[in-house]
Amino acid sequence: MAVLPIRALPDPLLRQKAKRVRTIDDSVKKLIGDMIETMHADPGRVGLAAPQVGVSLRVIVIGIPEEEDIVLINPEIVRRSGERSVTEGCLSVPGYYGEIKRAESVTAKGRDPTGKEIRIKANELLAQALEHEIDHLNGVLYIEHLENKDKLYKIEADTTQL
Ligand SMILES: [Zn+2]
Image 1 (cartoon, rainbow, N blue to C red):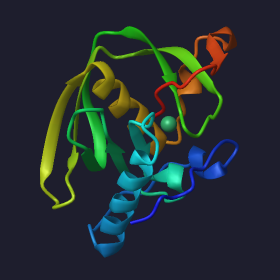
Image 2: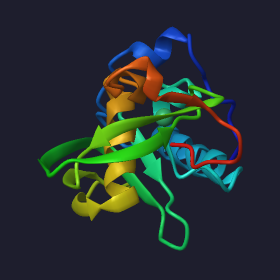
Image 3: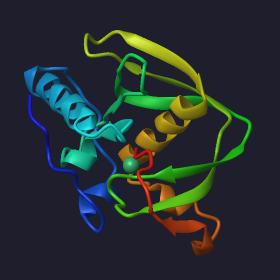
């Protein structure tokens, strides 16, 4: 496994819609291992989408502190409910965080690395991370959800990065 460099704006790959994974072969398994290692390379990172490490495939990893890592292949949000304001940062938009609206809770589905279909019901940080990482697969960054530019702030201290 290896820690991969993170792509940041204005890298055009971050704006592309990532491709579905057809077969979970060795290259996809290696990618997942590298993504997990890259995510854990810094304790402030709680999630990563494959386009952020330069691979345009629908794969995300999430590592909430004190919880088991989640890997989702071809993930989709199948249900959203409620709305709340959150502060959010992104490894691919270094130096900033913003205030945006996210769902209170979401249900996501996708496949695990063995190919088994899984569903995750989430709220709080996990719901936010699922929405954020799945947005990445559609070429969407959190800054697109800003109501206005006044809600984007420069980072002063360490904050959670997705
Ligand atoms: Zn991000």
